[in-house]
Amino acid sequence: MKNNVAKQLYLGTAILSLGAMLPACASNAAPEWGQWGGNNRDFISNSDAIATSWPEAGPKQLWSRKLGDGYSTILVDGDRLYTMYRNEENDVIVALDKNTGKTIWETPDPAPPAEGQSVAFGSCPRSTPLIIGHKLYTIGASARLNCLNKSDGKILWTQDLVKKYALRVPGHGYGASPIAYENLIILPVGGEGHAVVAFDQNDGSVVWESQDFKSDYPSPILIDLEGETQLIIAMGNKRCGLSPKTGELRWQIELPESAGSIMSTPVWGDDGILFTSAEYGDGSRAFQITKEDGEYKAKELWYTRKMRVQHGSFVRIGDYVYGSSGSSTALLAGINVKTGKVAWRKRGFKKANCLYADGKLIILDEDGMLAIATATPESIEIHSKVKLLKPYAWASPTLVGTKLYIRDRETIMALDLS
Image 1 (cartoon, rainbow, N blue to C red):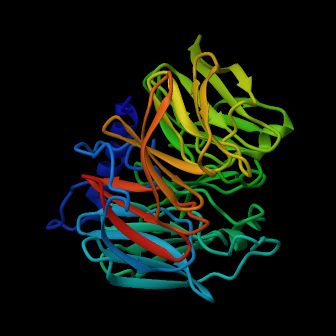
Image 2: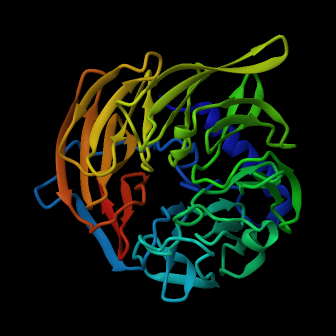
């Protein structure tokens, strides 16, 4: 199921921003993969002509190079790729040539680990940048929000969220990816009165602050609900919808404290069902969001511990969500979003990210095993798999056309899936 609503929301907000941001000679074309989860923010690619199987050595490798420590996913815009990594002292924002992998520019951002931040899995960036017009927005694990000129990497403005809000970043560092709405960049920040903050895209000034949640990992999404655009936030044990224009609370549901372990991004369906999943003491939940007598309401439809996504990406196709359940012991799984009934589970992969394109599921597990499969409500068939990366390959793959971009904590590579 292609989420056309999400696509329209993203493209609409991007185009609204372009008029004030681009010189007259610049192209208004949207990036091919311009934010976390792709332009639809749902980990579904519109690519076709993807091969069903590969040779034993895997798909054709176009190039591979050393990069640096990081979990940021890879953006594609024209002939360039954008991502982030960590060297010994700095976060580094980098632009690469899409066809060769060679560095076009890179910009260091001095960002020591925040107080109390665990570096057990590195102090490297977790968040994925965002492209709007000729600007690139990034935020590292120590919660420094930067706006850069996309062409040369020059930093135009910075907001240090730790200093500005006395923010205590989540245990392993800040991880949410920014989202755009009209002329705003919106981020979950955390704290009393400023749990979610909207910044002006052009100068970084604060436009609005809202809510009282703690800082947390999940990235927000935009949805269309009864003709109204809402910002969906999952922070701690709260799930809520806000007005992206003002930060006004439109609905909220409070869950048991165990639900505060959420790290993964929610997924929305045109049927008004919001699906979320968490590991540790929680599991998967579905909420029906409706409008009654002018007010929005959220009702939990079901809860199960039989599917527990830690921080990987998952996709919704029709009435089913497909993803990787568990952490130390992981299973690929399919679950019905209307009933919560698990359709199937399959062993053979470590904790994984999933991406959907051309009727196929692309799977990259944390050990660097890449696979292509067909997932249906009845079963999953693995067509090919090959180990290409090293642990921990936690960055979700990026697919544009037949070109797949993947990375681990040392290497970035491009593959041809045709």
